[in-house]
Amino acid sequence: MTESEPRWLSDEDQRVWRRIIAVINMLPPRLERELQRTHGLSLHDYQILVQLSEHPDREVRLSDLAEATQQSKSRLSHQMTRMENAGLVARRNCPTDRRGAFAVLTEEGWRVLEAAAPTHVESVREHLMDVMTPAQKQIVGEAFGAVADKLRPATRPTACPSLKQP
Amino acid sequence: MTESEPRWLSDEDQRVWRRIIAVINMLPPRLERELQRTHGLSLHDYQILVQLSEHPDREVRLSDLAEATQQSKSRLSHQMTRMENAGLVARRNCPTDRRGAFAVLTEEGWRVLEAAAPTHVESVREHLMDVMTPAQKQIVGEAFGAVADKLRPATRPTACPSLKQP
DNA sequence: CAAAGGTCATTCAATCTTCAACTATTTTCG
DNA sequence: CGAAAATAGTTGAAGATTGAATGACCTTTG
Image 1 (cartoon, rainbow over the protein chains, first blue to last red):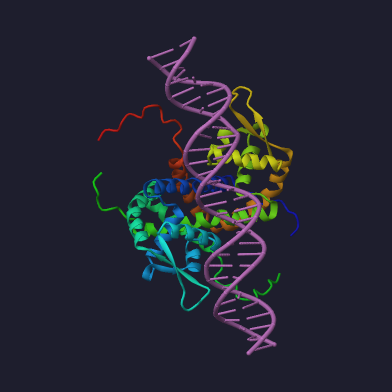
Image 2 (image 1 turned 135 degrees about the horizontal axis):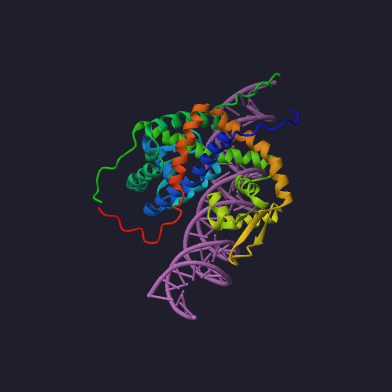
């Protein structure tokens, strides 16, 4: 690749990008503060509780949980330790694969989630969903679906990804 | 407020919300890794450099910088210290308000920004802007503009915000 | 089968973020 | 004026995140 003039963003794209990143910067802290204040949960705690609650037996393999919540295994591991200490989840060894483990939602975790959900949903409405028109939500959903799919790690680099030909 | 049935999100809203949060979870780390790898900058470093570069004399009051980059003063203060140590920025006392200070872009900071910008813009294109159609970008821009405006701290709670009447 | 290589999860250390003080200054207003 | 309140910014300690390294266990494959 020779050094060519970089392709800057158009003014319009620039504005769109800045708005997106402003939301990215502000929304999670806002949602988190409200969750924290009302139920002592972080946003990550909440996301994990939700995932667990939606799976059979309320348990998920840690790897799957990491992928579902878009975080590294390392981070999830720390997170689990904290949530375990808080009594929200437990670890269970996987019987068929002795490397693996499940995260399990505890009764306590279930109750906390049940209590926190309405408040959290209300926050999400107030700060995000109710601010957009139905038409906007529709389009944003499509656009972000595509973006998310592209960001998500390929589900199997298939061994040798044959060197690309020019 | 009596305990009434919570207003859950519709299935469709739920899907939109999950896509948004997936992007929020994945995009910044992705952009950051590429910035970090190619130029040793964090995303926050970059945002700060951009802000400074766009202001007269390449300097901005710390408060304004904190607001422009949507972060707390405390965090900015730590960030400034790190960036100062890295030689990217400097602090300058404000002559008219002795509490205040400016962040100033150094020559080095300017050079690093100039070098990093093309790569970073390319990342933003690849992972975000080029994934959306022009029509989608248009709508997303409008929607996120509204969301961001609502999230941004009111620019003056005007003393006593007269108690709301039922 | 056994070595080589991949995957699952945890750990460590370095960084970064948060939140609650705290200092110093400016502004408000009785 | 001068006390009280607000604002600018910093600090410190506790907690969270990162990325590389590690250990343990599966899966290939020659």
